Length: 152
Image 1 (cartoon, one colour):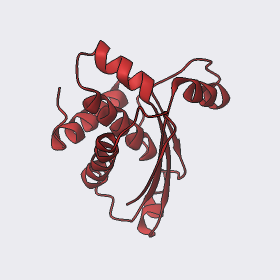
Image 2 (cartoon, helix red, strand yellow):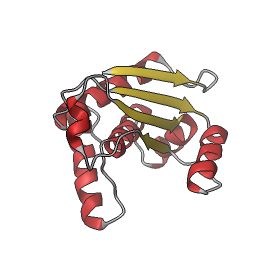
Image 3 (tube, rainbow, N blue to C red):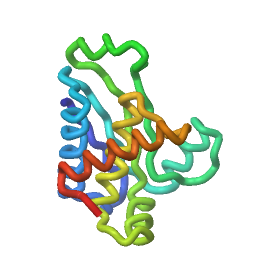
Image 4 (cartoon, rainbow, N blue to C red):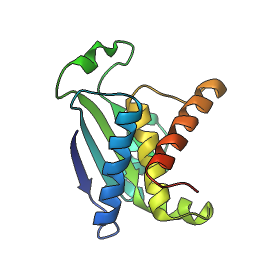
């Protein structure tokens, strides 16, 4: 995997969080049996940045925890046969991660792992609009988080 992590959090992001993101992404690709060498960009931002993106791309004028921008269409999985496939971009709000970790009474590491797993599954074509799809996606997230040691 080619991973680019952009940090624009003014010191709220550290190397242990960077490792969690990398570990979760690698685990998700393994769980999903993705054998190509995908490229993924993760931007860790503050609320105002993710709010701007949320407004621009989803017409929702409020901060959110994670956004995913897939670069490939998973209705045609032949794209995964190529090397160096650009899967897409994940944007995580570090401020939302801290807030949600506190609200859910778990560690910030677990929350960053959860948001990363959620983001990569969106890049891999999963969604949670329908209840059946939501169960599949959330079950996958839990498998990934357990495998990297980030259970609740």
